[in-house]
Length: 78
Image 1 (tube, rainbow, N blue to C red):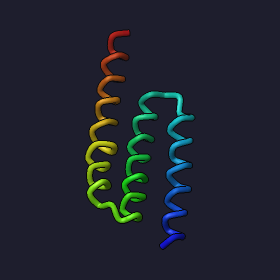
Image 2 (cartoon, rainbow, N blue to C red):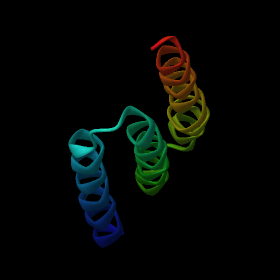
Image 3 (cartoon, one colour):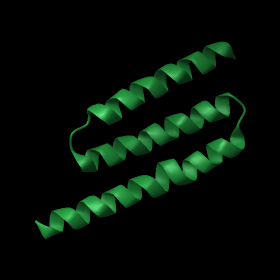
């Protein structure tokens, strides 16, 4: 079980670097969504299903959707 947790921590760290290094806000919202899935899997691997479910709802769906809507609205004004 410790190996699974170590692998998940490594994937989450790599995902965080990818999100930070992405320049385009629309692509960053997509990578943020993938990062949310990785975090949810990490939470599941450390036996926190309630936190994982919240992460899936908020971090994977709602926040990237809000970012995409904001990017779309600000690009339309230019």
